[in-house]
Image (tube, rainbow, N blue to C red; front, side, top):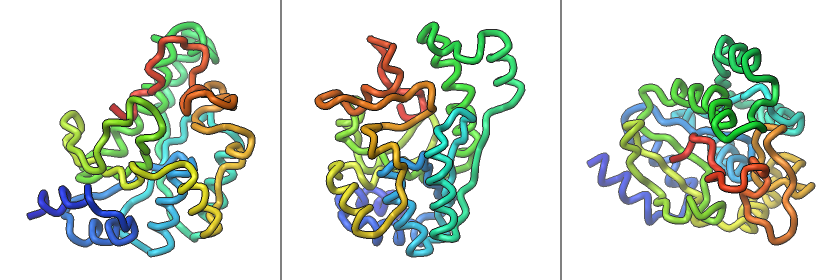
Length: 231
């Protein structure tokens, strides 16, 4: 019965009702991961404004985020009087990486960049998703070719959980209009042509006509433009 309900989410349009129903009809732990991008702020608003308490909201603090990201994090907590659980990298692994390779070693090779992403993002995410049944994300098909074939609800075999992408079919215009209509705080870097925002050393503004992910790890010509969080 639960699996049938989850499969039905793929055709539902009203995200507010979907999240409310998800929180009451699904057994097990439900979490939403936010990086405070515009998509994530839409979902945070829906969860916090409607007081959907059975969905835990968490974020990964890599230690290399923009000041503007921390600012919107703080504004979100204040505006909604909400709780956002933070996960941090293992300090010993960070120390070993920096002491062995340098503070900005990720510029030197794809392997070192992916190792940094693993330490600062993937491993903390693994802890955040421990014993989770449903993982809600702000992924949109429009964001990259790698995400164009995603489904709203899909089974993650490796992590043994369902992944729910309620904004999958939304356009950037729809996301921006929603934020404006509801007065949702957002990262002001978006006003400076930062589209996909991650760690400060690994993110730049994009130019007109560039791909959505062009500002991430721009020095890697043949990179997949993903860090391992979403497979």
